[in-house]
Amino acid sequence: MRTVAIARRANARQGWRMTATAPDIAIRLRRAAFNRALADADLPAIGPLLAPDAILVTGTDSAVIAGRKAQLMAWKREFAAPARTVYIRMPEAITASPVEPIALEQGRWEGVPAGGGDRLASGIYSAKWRDMGADWVIEAEIYLTLA
Image 1 (cartoon, rainbow, N blue to C red):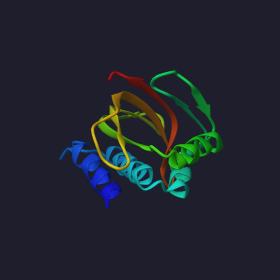
Image 2 (image 1 turned 180 degrees about the vertical axis):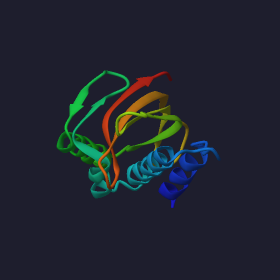
Image 3 (image 1 turned 135 degrees about the horizontal axis):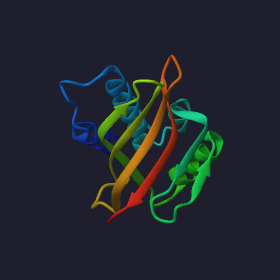
Image 4 (image 1 turned 90 degrees about the vertical axis):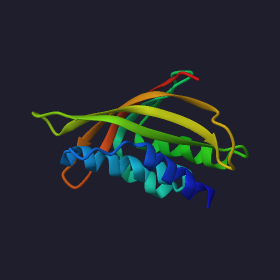
C-alpha cells in the first residue's frame, strides 16, 4: 500500500498542464509508469522504458550506468537492499524536438525510504527520450543531488 501512495504522490506532483502536447503526455505517462515500477520494485516493468543503450549518470558520485542490462542489474540490487530507497521523478518540463523524434524531460527527483519516512536525498534531473514508433524510451538520464 505504501508503494501505491508514493506513486500517487509523484503523479500528483508532476504538474500536468491543460496545453500538453502528445509527446508531453506520452512522456509523462511513461515517467509515471517508471515511478510506479520503482515504488513496486517491478523490474520487468522498467526494461521497456529504456533504450537498449540507455545511459544513466547518477546524482552523487556521477557513476555511469551504460545499457539497459546494466541499469536493470543496478535496480535489481537496489530492490534487494534491506533499507531500500524509492526514487521519484517529477517532470516539470517536456520539450519535444520539431525536427527529430526526440524530447528532453527536466524536473526534480527525490529518494524516500520504501517503508516511509523523511526524504533521504533530492535534486534535479534531465532525461532524453526517443519516440520509437510504438512508445517513447529513455536514451539518457543525468541527475544532480542538491540535498
